[in-house]
Image (spheres, rainbow, N blue to C red):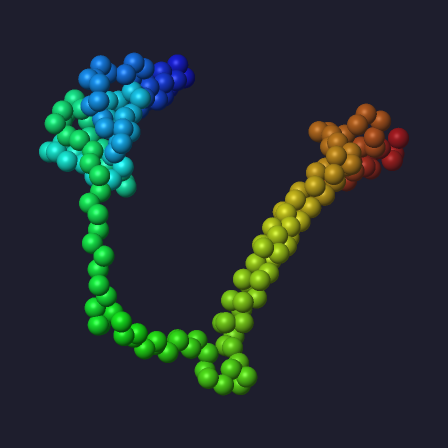
Length: 182
């Protein structure tokens, strides 16, 4: 199964690669003044603009593929006409009042309890989490270690009485009397 996974990943990686050899294209198919030909895919990346039905534009790039559109070509950008500022643009708009998050008398402002707690946790949150983690470790692992040490220090339990130990007292009084008579 690991071999199949490796072969699948290899096939996926190879699927996105361009061909090793460039396609055979006529000379001058991509005008170097306005575009740049790709090395292996047969596409021309336009610097400014593209003319033709097969031109594509995406993610800030403009290009065409010679195989799909042999009549496409890269062209120069149209010179932009200087625009005269209109009277409306000349007038400066009055600035809006900035939003005040606190009352105008900031000296008299007292933050609420929730704001103080938020600021405290924002400032010391990493330390609080670290101390909490250490406390959890202490609460969980210290008793486990102590129990493990106590279990190793205790003598092993035996299944029955050892030889030479005294017999437990019997419950029968008649057997006691007979042993005294002897």
